[in-house]
Image 1: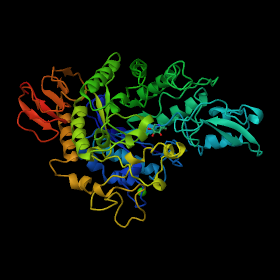
Image 2 (image 1 turned 90 degrees about the vertical axis):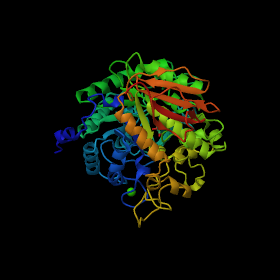
Image 3 (image 1 turned 120 degrees about the vertical axis):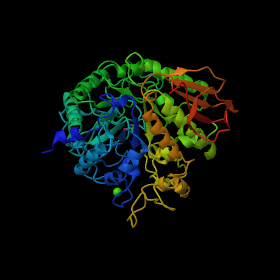
Image 4 (image 1 turned 30 degrees about the vertical axis):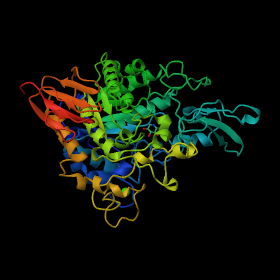
Length: 558
Ligand code: NOJ
Ligand code: CA
């Protein structure tokens, strides 16, 4: 029997119950972080070996992308058992040990919960396939007869977010062509029916399972998509998410989060974080309203171009959306679904959108420029009020790998779009830790397999080993910035005040002691008055801040 108290005893005590309001959270993509056993796939053993690296980086928590058993049709977002660990990653005992060891070095653990859909290999879906139409087993999903003669057409025209129809037809147990089931993502990811009380009860039990094991928080995948209009009406492509959309951001999704919050509140200081890709600030604000989620991801910031006016607008909107509930903002530069920040900021068009990935990949990338800007963006991001996410490899300045051979690509987006969309593999390439050639310490010496995606040779200079102690490296910039962010009471949670500045220059104060200046104009900017320099993103020419760079200044008498 697991001793639950021992998990609580080891939990970091710092900063009281609302630790997540200021937290720097490291997004750890298990498959690509570190391979402990040499099969070319990252695993929990690899993570445990590098906990001191994470503690030394100065982060407060780690969010793990899904670590459950999965056929990996969507890199783990197709879960076949919500109460276990993917065998390629390790065992439940490894997860228990990892949670305890992480807590012991002051790192909290956030796990990914995927409630919208499971894997087609999940026992519930397998049971549904062998049950009859109209059975309780099928009622946990969205099974429907097809339209047209013989039911040959899908029940409606909804399209999968990964491309192609959102419906797949099954063969009934007697061998006849059968019903269709709904999958907003890949066919291997059938959508659960959240109108079914069994589904609700199951996920509450899953939350308790992981909270009881010591998880400090939950990142909720596709959080706006859970509830559907049971009439399954057609949807025009430009229908905005909201009450009239058949499956995105419907009003009835909120009662689910109120019940999850009640579960979280039974435990101490557990956080619920929503992944919600809706741009409407007012609708988004409802998710952090009373008794719901603690925070939501901030995707407008992640796709905002490198432009002072637009950044300022996104920052102001974000703070305004969180203001009524008092929820802290979250700031994210990149994640496992979007292009790496160095590449994005090195292109002539520095925006990003999931729908236009192939256009962005077609643009030239100036890596030196992108790196300079990414350094400035890091200081901007880490100075903003609230919590912040660092996607693994961002702290090394890794770029988007755009030249992966087609036959090695793994992302279902690539396959389902008929190769029209390059997909997300380029941001998921295994980390370089040390050495001069692949696998760059990702796998141990004598490993039996290559890393699951090939690493560029140029990453030799971006390994943890190569960057450690190099004053101008991205890694040392992140280490310094995270250390200052942690020790300065004015940073993290709180308020900010804009200071008037020249066009293209962002200046804001955090309390009376810290001022952040970001120069996105085309020319050097004169620094405002200050009492000292805390940190700069690049070389400085006395009182002039070069373009595409940022500084943290000491103000007042602190
Ligand atoms: C969002 C996740 O971040 C993404 O990686 C995944 O493919 C979809 N949700 C579906 O689960
Ligand atoms: Ca491995």
